Length: 177
Image 1 (tube, rainbow, N blue to C red):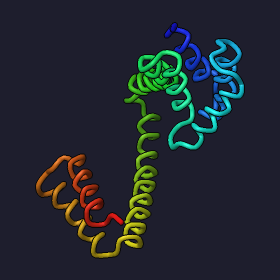
Image 2 (image 1 turned 30 degrees about the horizontal axis):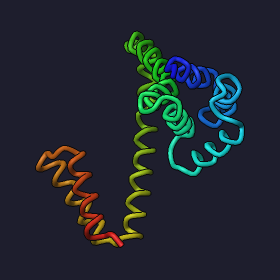
Image 3 (image 1 turned 120 degrees about the horizontal axis):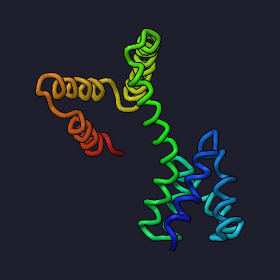
């Protein structure tokens, strides 16, 4: 199988598919069904239905499935990379431009205005998680998890990933249904 064709089949829709995964579905269909004839319209619609039933971005699921079907594991890697490559390239370009102008007063003002917004959004998300935890598992379990996490993070200086694993294990063992 030509991995270049797999790359093109997902890179081109990634570039011109403004609006994310759902906007790129007809573009991917054009490449996969119309241009390369890897699938019939029926097969594509069945794959799309299955991809929609699974969690996660639709474009990467389509790329993974079709890439695997056409080129095995390497085809999956090529397809998924081709799907995320346009965003990756754009992010690198935009970050380099931002880095070039990082000392500009306008960029500093923009950054200063964005930080409180992000803090408020994270605070709202944390409150929502805390409220859900309080409602679902009770106040004592919530307090134990919050206090334990705080102690492990701030006093013991444990890596946050390890604290998350501990909380997951605790939840699985003591809170699992």
